[in-house]
Image (tube, rainbow, N blue to C red; front, side, top):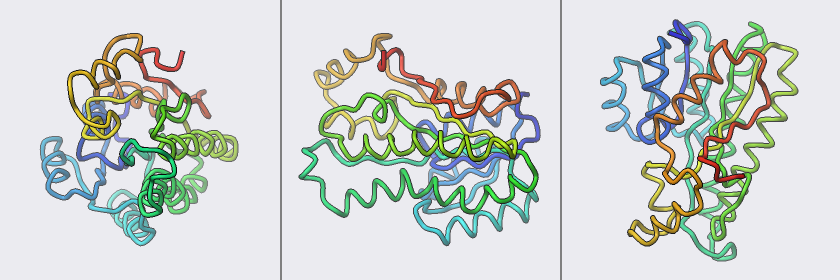
Length: 246
């Protein structure tokens, strides 16, 4: 019960890595507010874990304002924020990505981190406690071709994590990130440019350990970084990638 009675918000928690993180946190005793834009899947996950949920588009400021009010009304404070929500554009040449696709990727992958900080950091600073975990990607450390602006959004998140960590350390607020390799999530097909045995084999060949990341892998890593066991760790980008970035 490493997260017993800790109040945690997890964005993008209706599927994929977010769902795996939510299950691990719930098993470890956390009180969760699961956030996602997909109400149907969100209800299913929250019911299976007996945890609360809140429907939101994390790229919208008004949604974060409502989430803050809801959280403070229910729990008075929040101990952990996991910025997991993320999307990608389909593999294509950088100049072929439309402005609409670019804006959507950065609004979800980057602006959501800014908005979570804008609304929740003041409370954490006041209470002088808190943990923020950003779910980045190996794409921000070792970019793949034809995912240029997705790579850039995750590189932004990695730099933001370090900048947030150094600014918030005096307030006893820790900020870290995990960098998974592509995993068994709904985004995998987009990363590979299609789901065929040859594409999957080629993709796996770049991961030395020989398998994709799983939601369970992310849940375990996230739980450690958000627990008191990691109280001396801040500004770290933990590669959970089977050796992809070596």
